Length: 224
Image (cartoon, rainbow, N blue to C red):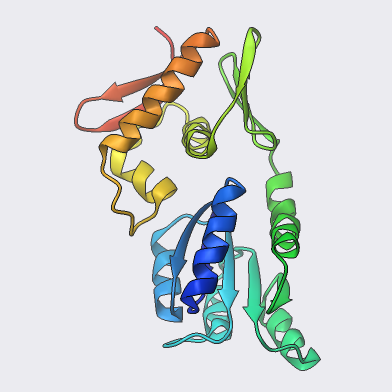
């Protein structure tokens, strides 16, 4: 699952990003409202954590534009304001939930899970292709012959492939989706993680394969 964090307090943003990473979420961080809208327009996100007090465009204005445009993305508002009327305004503007600073990390993660539960419940927690299954709850990649618990980036890459079987995915798209638009990670890191996944698929006697198309990208195909 991919999350956009819009929070202008840099130290808090870094802490939340680290927390999301530890919990196997893929995330991008932005620091003002205009940047948040630009990322949401260009990227494919499953949820938005949105600070109300931000430069250029405040969080409520961002939320209002999203809802007016018909964007249904789940939104969790973060704010230092605790007055009831502020909460009501945020929820009436279209937020799914509201969290007042300071907050505990456990509560933040619980609210993210609750906010995205209805969206994730629309699909099975398991993704399958051929004889391979990925459990999105336990991060377990399995076949009839065994299983592996995937590390964070391995899980995100395998999930991306299984959500798009037989579709050619450019290397740059992996970087944007998993490492973020502003990452300085080099393209060859994608090959490294795909190599890890290929070895695990081979060990599981998979009847699917990660196919490379020269100068184009990678796709998940049935084994030849």
